[in-house]
Every structure is written in structure tokens, then in C-alpha cells.
Length: 259
Image (tube, rainbow, N blue to C red):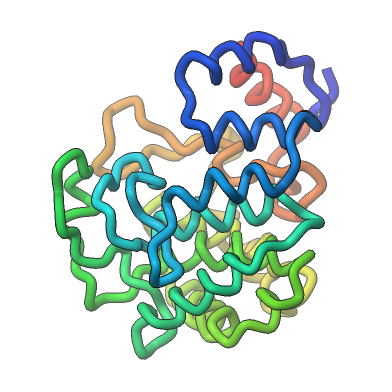
């Protein structure tokens, strides 16, 4: 098996989605396999959209409250990435919302105040909305940069550059034992901007020094067996972050995922 090519039982995947997935996820899968058009995916995403241009209503499954949240913005941006090369005006409206909730330093709070904590994970409902979070800002900005690769309106939106500058400054200040999820999302941002920001390559190499050759890093305060794995750090082939792992390591992780 080549590290970038695997054999997946697509019929089993589709059956699993039919039994368990939301309409949005089923349409994203159908778009991936050429069975749906971008408009149908965006229509499903609109069910989670608020009048302010943000997203809530459980789009982030562990955050059920209806108000717009940065975590839900991440998943909306993933959809806008999926529909490439098509674009949607909702992506620009989402950037407007992100600008409206960003803190003065350009960062996003991990979460905004939760109006209804029912069904919400405590780490979403009990966070401080007055403090910028590198973890959430980095992964939202990383995904926005991937959308920006095909959507000029997102690329030039005035929210994205300050958010990116905030993350780069925060990444420069990362110490010797960064939280592993923050580390992974910072690396995803550096990977996404690798071709456009000269500082990204050196920072990515530095952060890669925190990852052992196995690619397995225990999640602080997680379960005993809870690990971030190579594909969490480097989910996409042929990107700079993949160079931190051997082809054999990636091949083994892909086989584990299939199994």
C-alpha cells in the first residue's frame, strides 16, 4: 500500500452515513463522490446558520446551544473548502461575523457565552470569552486560508490577516510543553500558509520538534489512551507538514484508520 493511496470500502462508508450521519454530512459525502452539487451542501449548512452570519445549533456536535460560535465557524469553513472551486456568499458573511467577535489582539475566544448548556461539553460552556485562544483561532484561520485558495473574497477579507498575525505571534511564544491540540492546530495553520508567509517554514520545523518519531502525543487532561496521532497533525498528503513523518508511519496510520 502506498502512503498516499488506500483501498476504502466506500459502500460500507455510505451505509454507515445513511444509518448515523446528519443530512449535512451525507451531502458532503455525496459531493465528494460526485453524487451531489455544491448548492445542496450549502443548503444543508444553512440550517445551522444564524441571522448574524455565524453558525450554531449543534454544527459543532459537543456545542448544542443555538448561538453562533467560533467552533461552529470552523465546521462551516470546512464545508466552504469542500465545495471548491465553487464559492458561496455565506463564507464572506461568516468572515464578517468572525471579525465582529474577534478580540482586540486579533484572536478569537475559545467560545462565546453559552445560552443553553444542555448537551454541551464543559470545556465549551465553561471557557473565558474575554481571552484569545490560539487553539481555536489557529484552526479557524487555517481552514479560512484553505477556502481563500479558491475564494478571493475570503482571501482579501479584513478579518483574516489580523487573525493570522495573532496566531504567528502566539506560535512564536509557544514554550517547551505546548498543549497537544493547540500544537496540532498551530501546525495546521503553518501548513496552510506555508506558501504565502515566509516565517511559516521555520516555525513548522520548530513545532515539529515536539512530536516523537511515532507521531503519538498524549492529550493532556485526556483519557489515559487518548492520543493525537500523525493524521491529526498531517491529514492531507503532499503538504509540508507531512514531511515530519516517514511514509511508513503514515501508511500504518492509514491502514489503522481503514481497519
